[in-house]
Every structure is written in structure tokens, then in C-alpha cells.
Image 1 (cartoon, rainbow, N blue to C red):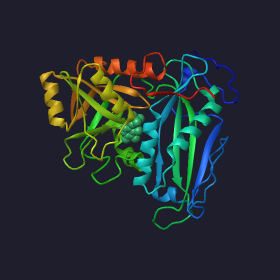
Image 2: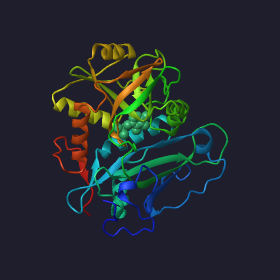
Image 3: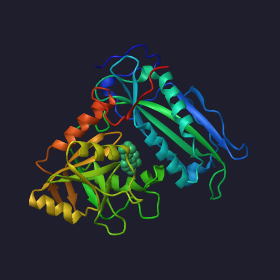
Image 4: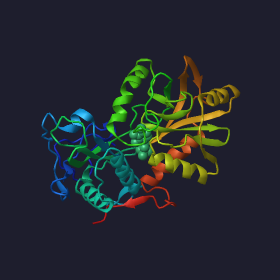
Length: 357
Ligand SMILES: *Cc1c(COP(=O)(O)O)cnc(C)c1O
């Protein structure tokens, strides 16, 4: 580990064991612009990464009309493999988020084709050490220079790439989370199920408070009842109570995670009973007291599976299981990362190899 692979060309050479998350970027980006007056999207263009030049009135900077996605490309076992994990789900979620934010959709086949081309162009930037990957960030922003409130007429779609290591500096070590009944992330009828920057803006204050108190993330509760669980920070959440693996139902306020969907299917494959249903903090606390809350973990592309060892709720601290990474979380992490890197079989046909050209 620690050295530069193959023929990486950029001056921004990096050490693979010190990548962090989202700090460095590859040489190329893809851009495509939408113009209502021109009647649609331009041809996508792949070019060296450059700064965006935006008028200070640009709508996204004022009213947040924006959508993004996040997926990873992995080096496979063969030199030429470039493996993506369920990219069709990211692309369809992108268009669903766009619909909610009044942004025109991008043709899914074109999206997949040109995104793959971009990744192949910067393929030498895909890190190869265990736990590393090339993070892919498709984004669309409203570009009209206009201060009135309405959907923009013009948009910029772009994709940038960032070699990443583990999302949490702690690695796969379990995290402590703060359950908040004071702040909410999303409410019914809102934009909670769309992957848009505004949801993150809304979450920062609570996350900062949690960090100050020594917690890694916030566990969000339902905005209306303030007891049923929704999701954790930037991840979906799972509980294992005895042999039932439970995750909150989607229902509009929870982000429909690709990892969440994969965990549901893989845990079922492993023989666990998996349930999507309402789960309240009362049930979670009761399970801790009875000793039946064996595991709690978050799921998301960045961290894959992130075990929770402790949580604080209404001023009381609780330990999950024995405070260590549980069996299901460990197995899922190994299974998903194994598939993603081509080391394990892919029975669901989730892996797309875009390496050959
Ligand atoms: C992206 C995201 C997730 C996880 O989705 P994945 O597709 O699994 O990466 C969960 N919650 C929120 C709020 C998100 O933005």
C-alpha cells in the first residue's frame, strides 16, 4: 500500500492509505447543459476539471434547486475491470429526485454511457488498495441568473470523480449516535426522499451539536410523532432484535438507499427475517433492556455498513449488543464489499463491468 499505481498521470499524486473522503479529484469531468429555449440537453462533454463560472444571482446559490447522486467504481480482479454496483438504481433515483425538484430528467442510457466513458478516461485514478474506490458524484444545478422564486429554465449537469478511502476515519469500528427528538430531517410531503443538498443543509445544526457531545451521527425520528425511527445522518438504519432485521419503511421521508435495498435482499439470502416497518424508540429501548437488541447499523454507499455501538436518547446512554460489531453487520460488509470488488459471486446480477472498451 501507499504507492502510486500504474500510470497515474496527474501532478496530484496521492497515497492510497491516506485518501480520506472527497478531498481530491481526478483530471476530467463531464458536463451537459439544459436550456429551455434550446429545447433540451446539450451533448455531454468530457473535459479537464475546471471551475464553474456562475453569476452571483445563479438560482441554485439562493434557493437550492439541486440534486446529486453518489456511487462507487471499483478496480476488479482483472487489470481491466471497472466494477459499478447497481448504477441503474442511482440513475433512476437521480431522475426521481429531479422530478421532485422540478429539474428535467436525464436520459438513463445516455447517463450510464457517458458516466462510464468518463470513468474509463480517468481509470488510472481508481485506487486499488483494500477499502478504496473511485467515488462518482453526478450533480445537477439550476443556473438561471434570476432572483425570483420559480424553477430555473436552465441547468448544468456534471459528474466529478474522487478517489476515496474509508468514509469514517474510525474505519469499520462501531460509532456512537445521538437520537434527536428536538430537530427533524424531513417531514411528510417534504423532500426527504429526494437526494438534494437542502436535506443536508437542514441536518448540519443537529449534527454539529451531536459532534460537540462526542457522537458521530444523528439518528432522526419521524417529524410528526417524534418517536419512530427514520434514518441516521447520511445513512439508512437497521436494527436486529433477536433474529428479526428491521428497517423503517420508506414512506416519503426516508431516502431510498441502494445499500438499504441491497442489505434487505442479502440479509434475507442469509436466512434472517427482514422486515420493513415502523419501529419506535420505545421498542428499541425496551429491546436494549431485555437484551434482545443485538445489533444496530447504518447503510450507505460511502460507509457501506456502519455498526452502532452506543446511542443516547433523552439523556440516557444505551449500549447495543455487547458494544462491538455484530454478526449481521460484519457479514453484510464482507458480502457487499466482496461483490463490489469482484472477489465474491454476484447472484443478483448487481455488478456492471464497464472496464472493457
Ligand atoms: C445517499 C443517502 C443514503 C444512502 O443511500 P445509498 O444509495 O445507500 O448510498 C441514506 N440517507 C441519505 C439522507 C442519503 O442522502
